[in-house]
Length: 132
Image (cartoon, rainbow, N blue to C red; front, top):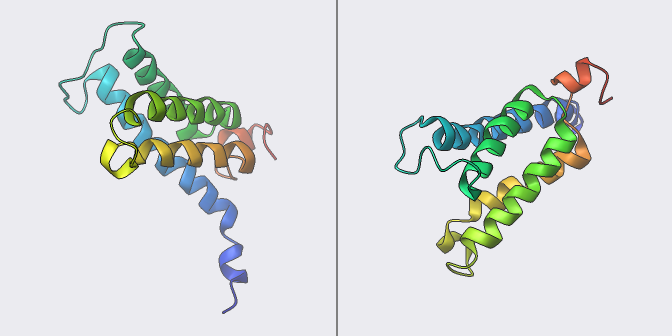
């Protein structure tokens, strides 16, 4: 099978991966910081570890959605997700499917991919000439 036609859309799909991942990630921040959607863990104490994570999810997610400062933000969020996995999930069980950390692992590596691959053509970074 010839994949040349599919390969032509790879840059745009990199943008789609960034946008969709960031939208879902952003929702975790809105839940923690803004209480939407409603959660019993909303509104954590300011400067607590949970609050810092929520703020990074909220602000970092928003920046990745629009593709602004994509590589440094993705690097920071990849590290956040690595820390989240090892500090919150891994101590519960060594199997990710049993410790609830599978999403943290996926986010970590999707964001790490964005660090190296860039935000794709549908991004403010590209429009502003920051990432060609």
